[in-house]
Amino acid sequence: MPNVISMKKSSDKKPAKTSSTQDSPSAMKVEFPILSGTIGPDVLDVRSLYKDKGVFTFDPGFMSTAACKSAVTYIDGDKGELLYRGYPIEQLANNAGYLEVCYLLMFGELPSPKQLEEFEDTVLSHTMVHEQVHTFYHGFRPDAHPMSILCGVVGALASFYHDSTDIHNPRHREITAYRLIAKMPTLVAMAYKYSVGQPFMYPDASLSYAGNFLRMMFAVPTQDYVVNPVVERAMDVIFTLHADHEQNASTSTVRLAGSSGANPFACIAAGVATLWGPAHGGANEAVLNMLEEIGDVKNIPSYLEKVKDKLDPTRLMGFGHRVYKNFDPRAKIMKENCDAVLKELGVADPALEVAMELERIALSDPYFIERKLYPNVDFYSGIILRAIGIPTSMFTCIFALARTVGWITHWNEMIGEADQKIGRPRQLYIGPKRRDFVPLAKR
Image (tube, rainbow, N blue to C red; front, side, top):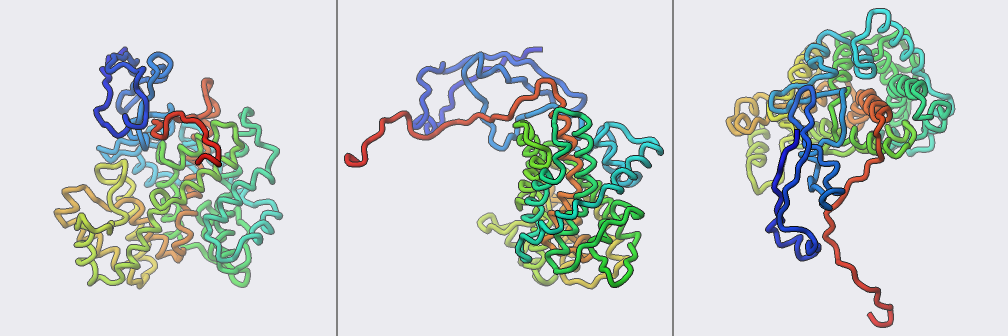
């Protein structure tokens, strides 16, 4: 049904000084169709706005803009709800393994036992990478950040697997999805091994997805490595909780890159690059950096005072969320796994002691309660990864590993749309009006 909206010129004089509105009416009424999804708020369809009225919408950060249709993931930030293909994240994290969740995201339904077995066999049998990829790593400095290595290597996969990059071939798209999900743990583990000067460990298809990753990370050729089942379970849950999160910055980037017709490896590399930003995938790394800065439990009160001071730039990392205005539904699950891992490993680490005390104080302090600054998934995931022995610089790589299935699923969904168009955002121009060039001698 149509919706009539009255539009008037802004009284803000700053844009008026630098952008012409002479030919625009001071007010207009516009009718927009209202689109309704299966759940969530209705959406105004403004696609004809420029064609019919000669104006754009202005929405920095896309806070009120739906850029696509999607059937993959739904978030209700007010309720603290996250659904993968309609299934609550709590149910999936507690009852399904990561590869079962991958199947769900990719194909839309939970697999039968036979389908899951075939899916797992396919993924685990393709975890090796081309042998020349090993030499590719040696082109990087040993002290390079693992995310910079991952950006380059993921993009370079198009050079090794160019036999399946026809984006208009559904079978090619499926093969690429399998390859990325299968090989990303290997690439991430290789980035770690290269950074610490240890030999690369080949995958072991007899292990689980998470178990194989842990072995590639921590095993060495000189001795056997036994996967701790508690740590294995925690890693699998971390992968599940990070598998997708709707139209976040990296997923939107993958979609935007894919809209140009770029090959899928390039698109996923663009997602990796976006995830590297501290405001996105670097959040759990920022949590650990904050804990290091606090240093000791006795310093927490003074640190929180700085957080509460409006004039002080100090921020409490790992608390609150851009989307969730309630408790992050992933945080409770992550906390349970965090407690299990810390108990199992008995790790004595000052930073972990600071984290636990910081959590206790923040959850009982009216300042944080009133502002709904609850611990989010990044707070607990960083603690788990540190306890396992994974260095802070690797945190975002593991996030990228887990999110790869979400990226490739959204990319595949977009490519399959009949009316898919290249992404081309508009702008509110505030630069100089037209002016004539002045020769150098007359300036």
